[in-house]
Length: 167
Image (cartoon, rainbow, N blue to C red; front, side, top):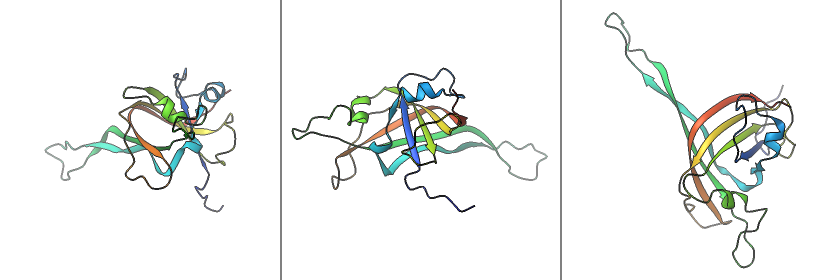
């Protein structure tokens, strides 16, 4: 089997209402959310694990300074494109992230699928990652070249890995 390219293979949804069971997200819950896939800068997408804390407490008898994984750590910041009309106002229905993350404290759940094509609809059996997040203050981009955009940092509260979408 050949390796798979990541080009156009990541779909990201956002739920403002918690799924009933984050370990078994229902297709109806996900389709009621927002699809942010076309709003995210590919090189500005950072949502996931950064590794666990290390606990290093070997016994006096131990001949190595071994460690075990402790609490998991996560990072989240996403660069979103803005969709503005000729007067500089948000285009309702297109400027979704800007109109969703209105300031620090907005809570929600990101659902990420890698493969199939990001344009393919969510389907029962899709394997996804689910991240419960709280938004921090939005930030300006590092530069103002190209498209208008903003950076939205997130504090990851919980993560659910390899979740299978159910009916």
